[in-house]
Image 1: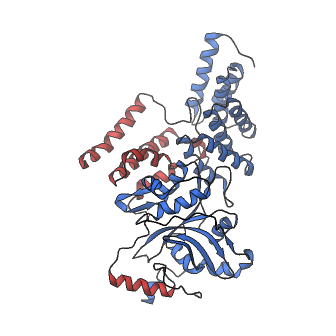
Image 2: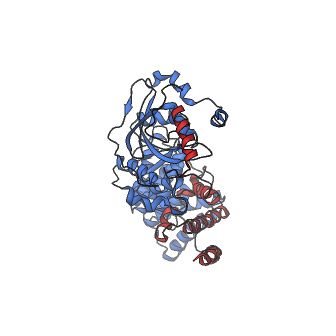
Amino acid sequence: MGLLLTAGCAAPLQTDRLLQTARAFPQPVELSEVPFFPQEAYQCGPAALASALNWTGVPATPEALAPQVYLPERKGSLQLELLAAARRHGRIPYVLRPQLESLFAEVASGNPVLVLQNLGLSWIPKWHYAVVVGFDLPRNQIVLRSGLKQRHVIPIHVFERTWRRGNYWATVVMPPDRLPHTAEELPYLQSVVPLERLKRWREAAAAYNAALKRWPKSLPAQLGRGNSLYALGDLHGAEQAFRQAVRDHPDSVPALNNLAQTLADQGRWRQAERVALRAVELGGPLLDASRETLDQILQHTSTNNLLGPD
Amino acid sequence: MNKLRRIAKPVSHLVVLGLLVLGIHLPAAQAGLISTETVVNAEQVQQDRERLRDMLTREDVKNQLLARGVSPDQIEARVDGLTDSEVQTLAAKIDQLPAGAGVLEVALVVFLVLLVTDILGYTDIFPFVKKPAKR
């Protein structure tokens, strides 16, 4: 029996390490305003997601979220589908590093954390989603919105064992104008990009703006900002974004190509042609796209023979 | 219905290939612009071949969701919300990934095992069990 229980649990718990440095988070933290939705059968995914979304100002109910995340044949919700659903509501999910420190850092910065737990054992799994809303290191306690309990308080090491069986999976759900405390550049931007496919341009632009405040020279963020503003019809803003991208990354074909297209759309053909030519000269895997942009500009300038204002 | 689903996948692949042959563009943010997705994947510019693969994988995941009971009018948006790498993971492991449900359906003997492990602080099934403060 003891063997069965300890199998796979040989590695020391992170809790031990963390409790030794309890001074890092001396004060108890609790985000008591995070709303609670008691879960109905099989619906802990929608309930946990509703908590996280409502905290960011999206008034979604578990009933409304269920068709967006529930997988009938599996009688549950997959992690990746929770992320996708958050994006459908114009929010940015960000999966944390698998460490208690990251989890607590987010909660301490005011961001509740949605976690996957296996409340049972590896061979009798009970997969469950809950939302961490508080912790108290000196008293070794963690506070969750979980199942039917609005305030589920358990020792941190008990939580960690259930969380470890869920491979330490945790995500925050952020409003687009705020970065997670522990955000890293590429993973964050990769999580933003699907908002473009969902045509959530306004939120995408806000997220790229937030990213540029922390990583001012990030090429994907600069391009994303330009593309989003372009989609919103703000050609001037898009041009500024692409110009900045070209300044910081003079050899970026996407930056040059998109700047050329934006200039052409504003009737500034001479400038557009110059920029498009540079993109084509650089070649590379996107040559087809940049050549097409150039051709389209040349077509216009040759037929009209009327070069617009520079 | 099952038969239809079996046919749906090869057909959707054919349709995608057909679109490509006709020269219809791979997804870009807008006509003329190169999409953000093209540069964000580890900042490596994606080749057309990879973008084609991603597109086919998306179709594959849509069919898999459909076959697992998701309502057809939800399929498109559920897959659109995923990144390319999330789509790859889902396509490969949709039946192995944990599905959080928060519900346990087990026999009495297992119930007793879990009661004991709860009391010992290894599991957290029963809210009424007082968890040990010391490990």
